[in-house]
Length: 438
Image (cartoon, rainbow, N blue to C red; front, side, top):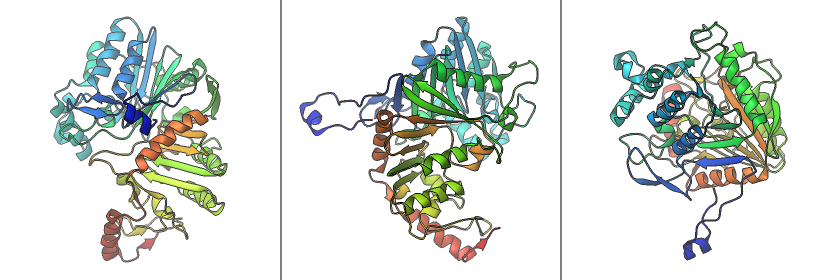
């Protein structure tokens, strides 16, 4: 969001806000120009309260609330949905199967290390069990095994449709760690995320159709839910939010499908004229790195910030942009790797509190085109997961996301960081130069 002007700081006046396009509301949980009291630590912190943003949408509903989100572990959100269900509204929830069992009914010994850590954190909070709250209230709920499979790659959507007129979506799951921060770690402020509230019946119709493909007859009905590739792909749709053109694509698609999301991203990158800014959680698709290399040859200004936890993995395309590579745990080098001959100096990782992640899936092209959604820049997002990919054509909206990227650039570590250099040294000692995979 807009940064404070020197004049506003001196006069103590409210910070001027950039205008947003008609029908679009936008919040960032690390926003420097607002603050709220964290429900985890009880302390005032900078940022917009994404949970309050979601709750306002639920409480404003008149007839129907459809939720498709990878994880929902905020009890207040569950209680609000349960209350609307008791009020007689239609409320339906779709979750990823990993997170559809109440955590209070799980035994830590049966969980993976990641799941066990999540279980311990939620238990330590002392909050209620969100999924159990929904179940006790009788809110209809399914996960991505409802089609009779073991689940899609991930049911990775993060959206809610209210009264078939409003869509709430973005990069955030409805969890403490994604919004507020980790319990027991007061320095954390949550994974870096955003949410939008989009007022458009035309847009809402596309999300309702995606929800209904997954929902089928719902719990206990015919086995006609469709997840993953079973949904049959589909082309991108062109709609409007107010006067803003929006492209909507729901993944996944088969690799040879001409409508698949990576091809859409490649096409958008190829159309860049002057500047490409990115803030990405995962960047592991070689074709997109190759497309950026062509932009570099054309003199396009490229800035990339990636999540510190993913940037230095052997499959990360951040390494290509840095002109380097890293053997994996089996000493193999990723097939088709193309480290840049002219390493990009404007690529790096933001400085975040330990435990926080850069969770945006965000790009701004030529200060007018915004790419966002749940869609990470990876083969899994395109070909396995249930995902949302959104493209907005709006300089007004782009200005807000550019300001967020600029905020993340403050103090960012650029180039080959000490962390990456240490990892490379360890792998060289263990693997030598590594073995090129075919």
